[in-house]
Length: 99
Image (cartoon, rainbow, N blue to C red):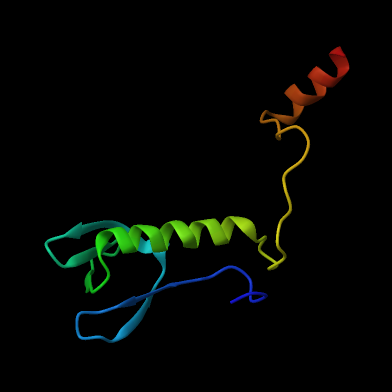
């Protein structure tokens, strides 16, 4: 996966051992009943072999990888400098003029 940019999907395994790919942004919530059941934002349900804890770790790893790479697929370095300031452009200009 290195050099290919951020991951786009999670690879999971259905109960019948078929591999599926899921966009983690489409997962609304997950339940272990005892099988792990994903409830998607479109109302669909999927049951997978991965445990709830394994799924959580997979999603956390996915999110970590996505945050480490910019949209062009270039690894990001450490963030330096002041954090961005939020405000309307007129407010920002007035603050600069007051200095």
